[in-house]
Length: 235
Ligand SMILES: Nc1ncnc2c1ncn2[C@@H]1O[C@H](COP(=O)(O)OP(=O)(O)OP(=O)(O)O)[C@@H](O)[C@H]1O
Image (cartoon, rainbow, N blue to C red; front, side, top):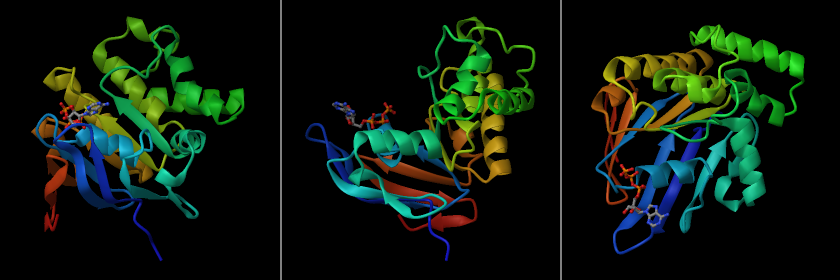
């Protein structure tokens, strides 16, 4: 029997009078690419953080189905959630997360080292990803010396290097011009499709959403539309 990759069940989160998440439920299947859209303040980042176990919503739960048993993300301690994030999830954010003082190789190798992969295998895996993403020759550059597009391709390599089940991206191309944005998005979508990785992308950019298999639109913390390439799914 196959299970969905992620299920958010009846999530609610209030910071003020308008809910950031309002009894929101969503199911994401393995290998899907899902764009989360909606106006500013509609709850996109709050939803991404709840799905990825970065934060825990005030009510509801998130079930993650990895290779083995399902895990209730919200029932885990913060250390356990950090371990799930390290072993099963990858992240590409608009900025931050990357360590500008470290080199390209060091940034990409970091999650592998944290997972206990030995140095030789880590080096091999990192070089394969850097070649793949057109970053060969930049191994020893510091992140702070790269262009925005190069840095985001390093972020994609780092998100994918441990072979995650899910990559979460929050405005991954938000700071880039349209050509560079297209290249980074291509790298993200192609590498996810090739490895069967589930992709959840928060974006304001319709051209990013157009290249995902499904678009979920939020307003005031609720799903107002859920459209797959093959048709419209019920919210
Ligand atoms: N840590 C926080 N403290 C207080 N309010 C918050 C916090 N995080 C989010 N909010 C509020 O929750 C609502 C949803 O925020 P969220 O960042 O999820 O929206 P968003 O759709 O991602 O917005 P944007 O597109 O502007 O990034 C907003 O009203 C926001 O101000």
